[in-house]
Image 1 (cartoon, protein in one colour):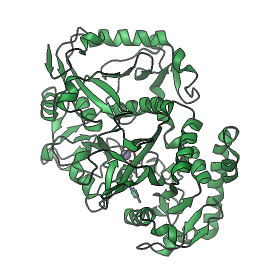
Image 2: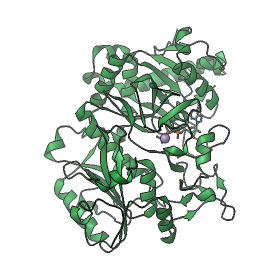
Image 3: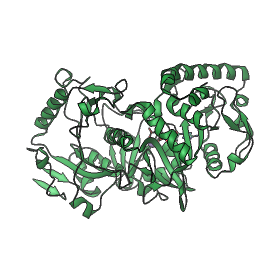
Image 4: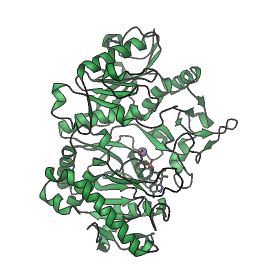
Length: 531
Ligand code: ATP
Ligand code: MN
């Protein structure tokens, strides 16, 4: 039985996916929520949200992600970073998954990845869980009724959490699997309910396809000046560095919070929704994001709430610290209706430095920007173990190594060309610790980061005085409106400047050790910017 709206020439049966129970095509939010509730997947929360917990997996499973090693992609994939799966193993996986799915009910959404018509990807997402279908409908771009009636899926994602893979038979690492097959234009996901896998698998696809067409693919958020889409900015950064938080700026128009492309037409959002962290979320600091946690159809994942009042507990991380909410971008009042902007005037690289060494903002030369882009540094706070206060550094190239199928230089070269062509100003912003490392200092106040960004993006910061940072060689502003001078100089925020110097030297050494792997692949000016 099929229900809903679909291009009659492109049903699942026509794709060779048959024998299913009921198939529900392109249901709208209320119907998906109703189905999810009836199936016992979660419950309705305050304001009509959908509350769900994902069980064992509350984050991505990077070690279970595979790229099928087919001849056409073989020479283009960065195999040191992407685990290969043999084509015949994938074929067995697909056959076994289809067999497992027989008789079950499935939910299908036909969606666009990419706001730029010229570069968008038409993806079909087949979900076992009705709420996964709601999630991906929020996150990707929704075709209108007419576009839907002629929709032809180019890539298909099947996400079946009840399917357990067999490493011996399917060439994977565990019962959990995320397998991308560029030749068959299929992605298979099994044995994880974490919703983020859906969106990040589309991201990985676009990160492969777009650079092949000269389009830069970026793990970044983006916004533009109100009324001026050509005055746009992008914010690169690894998880937890502030892409979502800082792009939702009341004084700018939000383009997107996580994934963008940069073509000759400018920048464009891959998505049509946001996936925000909700841990310690406060209405005062992040009013727009907070408001979405009580709006109809927002998916609230892995949050603890009061059983009677359904009041969310933003501080209880007993399910996971990676608790999130997913909502369509229109829920943010100052979001762009087109998802597009001009070539960025400013490029911001966000890092959450838990060592407390990097200044809250620094201006980068294009070569320094390339150095920091390839390094992809952030530092997480220590785990929850008591007494462990040492931050853990992460170097993840292009600020998103797990989603980059091609070699880092491919993205680096594209970014560098585009920066040179458009003359963007580049900045490094530390949203992490000040006044000492994690354990001693404190997290950078969000209002200070916002003031620094406001001054960077409106051009005023660039006009002021700068000093050269002795450790990293970049320019650091001395004054900024609405920010104390002291905050701009991390060494002075530490009780003991000598311990700052020692910590800084250790961080410099970590950068240098990590960067050694790129030295053979880069140009002399970037080598010269290396520290
Ligand atoms: P992901 O890629 O996982 O979505 P992200 O880069 O979007 O990560 P955010 O969701 O914006 O990261 O997370 C930043 C977190 O840090 C938020 O919980 C925010 O409240 C907190 N935070 C604290 N201080 C700052 C600051 N100065 N700037 C930005 N975020 C801050
Ligand atoms: Mn985010």
